[in-house]
Length: 532
Image (cartoon, rainbow, N blue to C red; front, side, top):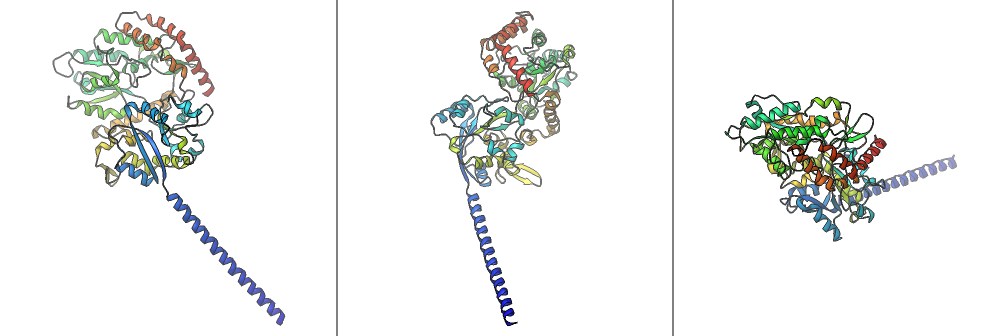
């Protein structure tokens, strides 16, 4: 019994020692885990330091900027901002890149279709910019607010992505008209091209502004007419009636053709329409001397013209621009027109090429080793907290809250001047608050309806597979040729002013195709068939 008792006691003591040792080990392990966690937190607390080359207006300065401080604090970053004036951004940026003293993040030049940056190929080849494929996968907000087509547009030939797209709203723009003039002259909302001719003729002849002078016109345009460099063209709006605008169309057989240069010569219908407006003196007589879309916009704002094609989000700003001159101004938007010949093109489908790109960000080789940390900061910007800072500024400085309402303390923050830095970072493309500033509160609901319609128009009317994101080098090169830069304007002007017959367009089309448009069309068709 004694020996057995001793054995039991020995076993119990051994168990006690084992438990004690085990508990001690567990305690040490827990202590080590806590120390590791604290170490990780300390490491996490260290802000990521990098510099950004930002496109901004001259009023934007990062020094003593509450917005900059807020981003650094909330994104756990230490960002140095180099703001380059918008006017010569690409020239200045290229000089900075040549100096070899460039920042970790640079802005890249893109079109809505794809990459047009003149340094892109050399930067990729010389490994100046880094691929970001492995890092964007861990950025849910960037993935959520970037158009799929934008990723396709920036994908390099080697299959890698060397930039983070900055996306904008993908939408259609409609024609804005002077509603007050229309109602004063007892005119209906124009629906067909004939309606528009009658509407414009009345504007030009019946003194809608009541000043006793024949100084108003239906609509204006620039000498660019429908050139590729123009962003918003009035004349192109009417060409849609015949599918003769600057869009690619699926002919119903899986082939695409460019509206303006369609081989059936349909653009002649549009030219004939413009010719009629000229003969009736209802089209601004200065269209061939107007310099840029700004001058056309300015004529609408001064009350010289009754119509101007604009984005729904800019409707209230147009009203604000006109009100000091004509306080009773009212503006409304009108859908695309139809024509008797429209039925001939009913089977055709618009094909979308726009990738929704509005510049992009690239990480240079100076960012090596910090790629994910920088991408994380960008991802924060598109998250709820970051987006609030980008779109509203700093609470207590730029705005204050009254319940769910945001009251602007510095209204300029929402403009494209002093605080343009916020808008040049990232966008949630279809965010309503970014486009509708409620500058004319009573117009808000109307604007919202048309903003929604402008986005929905694309999804309802365009084929969104096949050409989204493609930017053809052959097309770009064609637009640099005299056939387009000189002859296009010359021929269209002479036709609408009656110096050449409509058949002159057929002769010009032959020159267009022999100058390379045949190759452009083939390239787009090959791509369309392969990606549809």
